[in-house]
Structures are given as C-alpha cells and as structure tokens.
Image 1 (cartoon, rainbow, N blue to C red):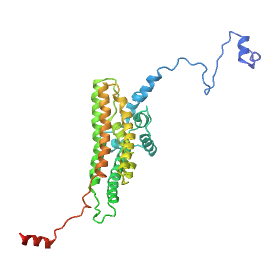
Image 2 (image 1 turned 60 degrees about the vertical axis):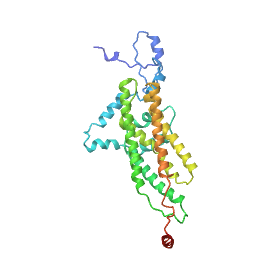
Image 3 (image 1 turned 90 degrees about the vertical axis):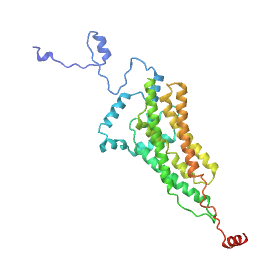
Image 4 (image 1 turned 180 degrees about the vertical axis):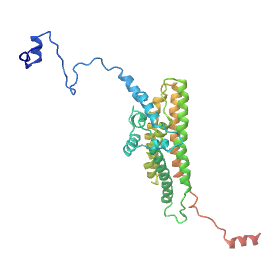
Amino acid sequence: MAAVDDLQFEEFGNAATSVAANPDATTVSIEDPGETPKHQTGTLRGSGREEDDELLGNDDSDKTELLAGQKKSSPFWTFEYYQTFFDVDTYQVFDRIKGSLLPIPGKNFVRLYIRSNPDLYGPFWICATLIFAIAISGNLSNFLIHLGEKTYHYVPEFQKVSIAATIIYAYAWLVPLALWGFLMWRNSKVMNIVSYSFLEIVCVYGYSLFIYIPTAILWIIPQKAVRWILVMIALGISGSVLAMTFWPAVREDNRRIALATIMTIVLLHMLLSVGCLAYFFDAPEMDHLPTTAAIPNQTVAAAKSS
C-alpha cells in the first residue's frame, strides 16, 4: 500500500501545456451542454424533397396516424368518441379562421392548421352563423329595397332559414364526402397520391366558408354591383384555400384528372356563392305589387250591356 505521504494533490494548469508535457497521458474532455459542437458530420440534403413532404403532409405521418388512432380509440356509439371532434380551444379556432382569410401561397392549410387536431366545432358554428346571416340579411335587403313604397307590405320570410340550412349543411358535408371518396379511389390507382381523412376535408370546407359571413352581412347594401364585387372577393379567397389545399393531393395523378378535380371543386364553390346571392338577395319579390280589385259598378254595367 502506498504511504500517505505519496498521495499529493496536483494543480493542473492549461490543458494544452499538460498534454504537451506528457503526450502519453489520457485526457477526458467534458463539454458544456449549452455549447454548440464545433464539428458536425454530414450536411443537410434534399431540402426540396422535405418541402414537398411538408406541403403534402408526408412528414411525421406515422406520428400523426398514431395520434389520430389514440384520439379515436373510444367506440363510435359512446359520447367520448364524438367529444374528441370538439376538443379544440379558442386560439386554435381563431388561428384557423385567420388562415382561411389569409391563404399563404405554397402552404397547405391542412398541414399548417388542421392535421394536428382536426375538429368539427369550428365548421359547425361557422355554418350555423352563415345560415342566420344569409337568412336575416336577405330579409333586411328586401325590406330596404322596397322601403318607402306604399304598396309594399313587409312579411318576414322564415322559410329562408330552413332553405339556407339545407343548402349550407348539404354542401359542407356531401361535397367533402364525395371528394374524400374520390381521393380514396384515386389513391388505390396512383400510389403517390396523398389522401386526406374525411374529418380533415370537412374541416377545410367549414373554415373556408367563414369569409361568407361578413360578405352576407354586406350584401344588405342595395347595389347589385357592390354585391357581385363582394361575392367575387369572397370566392377568390375561399376558392384559393380549397385549390391550394387539394392541389398537392392530386398533382401526382394524371394531369387532366388533377385539373378537372380542382376545377370541379372551384365550380361547386362558385355555384354555392352565386346561388345564395341570386336566390336570397336578387330574387324578385311579389308581395309589394299592387293587387287589382274589380269595381262592382263596372261589373254590373258590363253585365247589363251584354
């Protein structure tokens, strides 16, 4: 055993000096965790492909599917299964509304806002608000147009609420259902096509309709030119959201089929907006027309002369 006097503490100075004095010594270097490594092996490659994957939603797809599977683990007949579709906070809803109003060229709406947590809360209330906005604005528009006419008698048209509800909810559910089925069918034909879930498509269509809420309120203005300008602006914003969202999902398909799909999506959206404007705001009203009543004296005189 070594004597106690042989055990001595030694102060180490500069590491470089110590290594130079004893080249055979073994040194251990402990780096600061916050310090950035000076040498990095390899370089980042394929940035273009990563952008495509991000646009198409391929990145972290396994993680997304796993989270989606955990999210829908409850049986479909339970309340917990449908509660997950409304599990969204106010910040997320406002962020998705902002994304639908300010579409970013080259960015995918599903990838940026929806895929992490698709919901039905926003689309449901957006459609409900749009229904009442169209029905109430349509009644007020007809009232303002014929205001001051002595022969006009205002009668509230409550049937516009049910008609608007049928049109809006049918469009917000049936069109996404048809599009989802088409993408699933094309995905079986072309392996590179990226398909969206039905909930994601419903979410995109629901949030894309938000722009029509302020547009429907402004349709009260009794000027046809102003109304058509407003509908074109709303159609351009919401249509661009749909086109930029679904183009990455079909661009790997046949060129004609891809273009026909996007054109069909935009045309159906145009049919909805133009149809609502024409039916609820530009439809001719017959209630204000004067009614002609037969004069008894003239009727009796005509009978005697015959």
